[in-house]
Image (cartoon, rainbow, N blue to C red; front, side, top):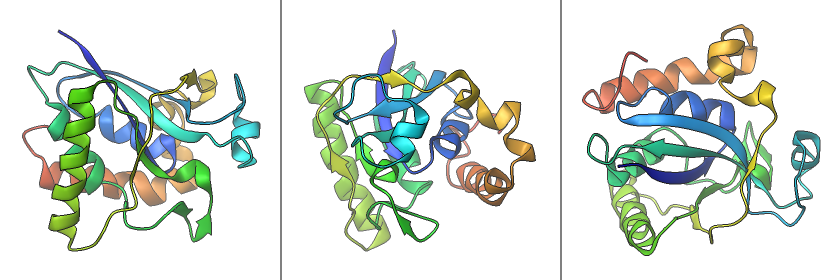
Length: 177
């Protein structure tokens, strides 16, 4: 059995690297969702005028990793308490958002937000947005950490610490990240 989850939480390079490191995740695709322009390019989304979020579409086996586990990992590996901020700059494409694919996921997402806010002791700004048209990002964005991210200064400043946090907090779910 396979399910899909769509999460936005800042730069999709970082988010992709996290979820590719989870046992039971079968695939992760970086892309754009939640905007008004059909078939946007990275440059258009980067302009912050299309309304799209940088996001990941995760295909997973719920017998190995649950949607609740994925939610908990998502909230633990990005800052869902500050709206649209990355590197101190406000950009809506970096918003924290969930795009549930079913009523069951919507309910689980609502509960996950409450659970994460209680754990953090702060309110979350994560939005529950309606499922919208998904647009895969350009090929050079896919598997970025594995292909060239380890030579990218931004990735090196962010991804290793996120992966370490993943291993420490979720050792049962983390594969050899």
